Image (cartoon, rainbow, N blue to C red; front, side, top):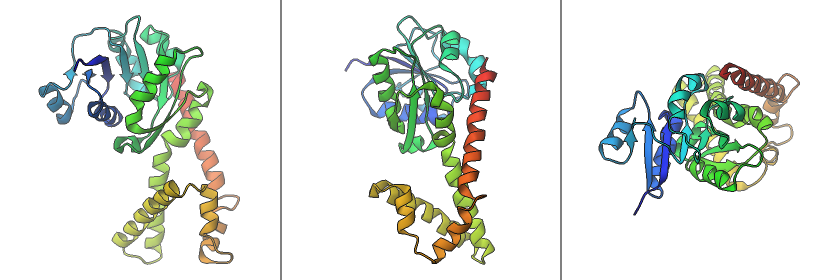
Amino acid sequence: MKPAASLTLVGAGRMGSALLDGWLKGPARDISVIEPSPQAGIKALADAGRIHLNPAPSESAIIVLAVKPQQFAAVSEQARAFVGPKSVAISIMAGVRLAQLARRLGTDRVIRAMPNTPGAIGQGVTAFTAPPGAKPADLSAARELLAPLGDVHGPVDEGLMPAVTALSGSGPAYIFLLAEVMAEAGIAQGLPRDLALSLARRTVEGAAALMAQSGDSPEALRKAVTSPRGTTQAALDILMDTGGMPALFRNALSAAAARDRQLSQEAD
């Protein structure tokens, strides 16, 4: 089978490697990876002839940038060497705007996406944005290439991307923190550490699985498990008061969105 049009991945960290793994499980592609410090797994793929590792620059049909936004200025010239008149560039960097991508890469065919870390096991969610008038083929290519990470939404208005980053991009850390603080609270109530950690972790995992399978809203599921004047209600009276989780999350997401906008300024 003749490989599909060339695909270049810049950055093979956690998210870049997750994308690469998904691509290699799909239709045959001619894939190049630009990574100055490749891990053993990436080297093994190159040795097996499944990817080209750090090849000489040549025009690529699609180039995916999976580096940290702070690295963009440093890698943009190297990445631009793989961009030609027919190339589509897809970025999964937080904060870097479409206009900045277009200017540094020398093409208007750019797409900006925000995945999250559960994408490493195909259970993530990604939202993407594109310039007005983007080619339908470019949007389809973005959906296809991001699909290995999980659900894909878009295109959305670029003005929503800081909120997307704050909610889903950073969101897994909030869930991990929830399990962490639940366990610590259980320890404070006298539970052994190992038991508290196991109970907290499995409770978060089970609740997420129930939410995924039931189709009910989070609010409906919360109300279903909350008996009037029961133990859950006693806890929620604390968590949902004026200084509780609703206010904390509004403030937290506001801070994350503000940082996304600041990263946009730093990318200039």
